[in-house]
Image (cartoon, rainbow, N blue to C red; front, top):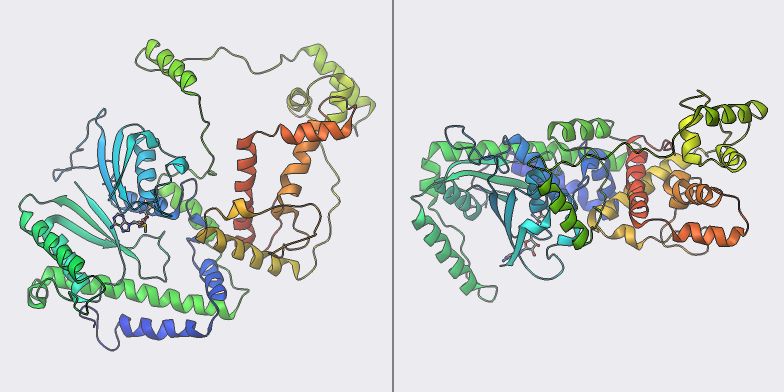
Length: 493
Ligand SMILES: C[S@@+](CC[C@H](N)C(=O)[O-])C[C@H]1O[C@@H](n2cnc3c(N)ncnc32)[C@H](O)[C@@H]1O
């Protein structure tokens, strides 16, 4: 039953027609087209644990940081510079919303989260961006909640109860929410003090729902009489207008996905630019997600004590270090070596001159203004390599979207002896061993003269720090993004 959208020609019926296009399609085809057609798709969670965190970042900015820098009705900031922001995140697992708030406020927040135990429990160990120490999980100001369609008297009734409990409400679909689905959020500002009776009423509704459960055929279909909602012009017109505009947007995007399904060469050229502009507008750095360094408790204690001794700024300045000093004599030696043989690699020069490669990297291009050119032998791309790469990248990104742990299930081999997923041919930019491991290991192996090559390779591989490996894995996602955005161009490696 539809109570709040415009009749037979309204968005509800248009949407039903648009959706029927997808009945013929395989779920994979549909998902791939959805990924390619959405200009905001590649934003994903960036360095947060999931897409939900980024939705929160998106909405917080759109509503003038009302969740992380709240203001009162006179436009005055509610929190002083040293005040903690207290927040509750209900139905919160795995905790993306909270991770965002903790990141934005750093140590100036205290969060309480409620969720269910089980597979969607909090993933506090994945709160890389914000300090999870100031977050208290529980199982079981302002308010934000995810909604879907608002077509039934029951769901519109719930919105009406919120409208009566807060000074302002808004129904908003952030750009980070996929445009063809019916997801939207209700954002409620400034809770009224005089609405205990509404809370009691909602409690009562909850009790009835619990009582009816799924075993009886009784259900609650209406919680606020229709005449009350329809006679409040402000409310009723707002819901109609919100449903119509969100519905129209949904229809356009469903049609777009259908077109992308029909023509698999279509791409959304704006994805890269949208990601750049959105992150900059939402004041989120465009960086890769990396695990923060885990510091031993003793070392952290020392660090905090040092900071408190060094005064209010807490800053401790390091004396100038910057590695090995470069003398004029050393520069002259390097120059002479390159005049003798300009084809020498840095690795070779490092070995001959017994100067670390990192020091040579500071001397050769910066002081001597000599730049290296390296001939790279590459396999020629075949005409159908590009579409294959794009298709592969989209599939991988889809899987990553639905299973955050997907990366940990990939096993790279240098020999193609078994596989589940076809890896596209001639794709060194998508293959971790090619774009990261071999060059990293070679640099390590040849850093000093080699005696036992096999032993040196094993040592080099074993000594790769964990965070370097994690960053390399994340690099694959970045490469997949580039392949989808550029319709299969080679990623600079
Ligand atoms: C869509 S997820 C929320 C995602 C979250 N906002 C984020 O930022 O990552 C909904 C969560 O609510 C939890 N949940 C469902 N029913 C609940 C209940 N009655 N009480 C507490 N949590 C509940 C689910 O287990 C799930 O973890």
